[in-house]
Structures are given as C-alpha cells and as structure tokens.
Image 1 (cartoon, rainbow, N blue to C red):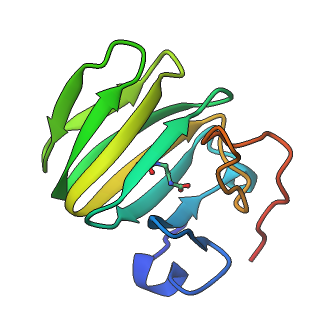
Image 2 (image 1 turned 45 degrees about the horizontal axis):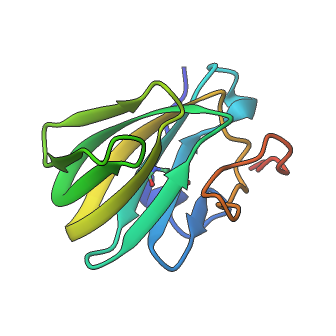
Length: 132
Ligand code: 9YT
C-alpha cells in the first residue's frame, strides 16, 4: 500500500499545466496499477477539444459545471458534481466549462506522466515517464 496527497503532488512533475487546465497525476504507469488517476481542474470560460484515440477515460465531477458535446452526434450533456462520463468509444468531444471544473479522471492504458494534448487533443503512447 502507499499513500499520496494531492497537496504534496501539486507543483511537482506530477502536475501538468496547459492554458485550459492543470492536472495532478496521482497514479501513473510506473505505479503498476493498470490505470492512471488524475485530479484535473479545467478553467471557467474555456473550451477544450479532446479525442483520446489511444486511451479510455472516465471522468467524475467533484465540483464546478461544464457541458460536454459528443462531436459525433452533436449531443450535449451538463456535467455537475456527482456525474461521471465515460469515453468508452474513444469519443471525440468538447468540454465547455461554465464554473471551474474539478474532476477525478482515470485513463486506461495509464499515462506515463508528461503527456500533453497533440493537435487532435490526443495523448500519444510514447511519452517520457515521471519518476519521483
Ligand atoms: C477532463 C480532462 O481534461 N481529462 C483529461 C485529463 C487531464 N487533462 C490530464 O491529466 O491530462
């Protein structure tokens, strides 16, 4: 067993930042759990297009509010605290954030730790690993 604290991982290599979000990756591939686990904050007023071609992801909203659009169908859903969405078909989607959106995210296969979105909003499989 091991324990990690969000407060202790913030500001280390486990925290990755972009213009639209920051993410603290509490579990990574080298933890050998078979998934990665992140606490991500997306900022109010942002719109992020994502397409995790190489991963499955589920996202549970802890606080804030966003709208997710399924780009294949145009369907939109409100995501609020207590709601989870699962990208079980590598779905192309867009997240429009109304209030700072804090969520817990799980990726399978696990991220290595240094991934940032490519031009399609995807993560590759060949990132450098984070060690600490
Ligand atoms: C909701 C969301 O952005 N999920 C992706 C995870 C996060 N951006 C990360 O850790 O890269």
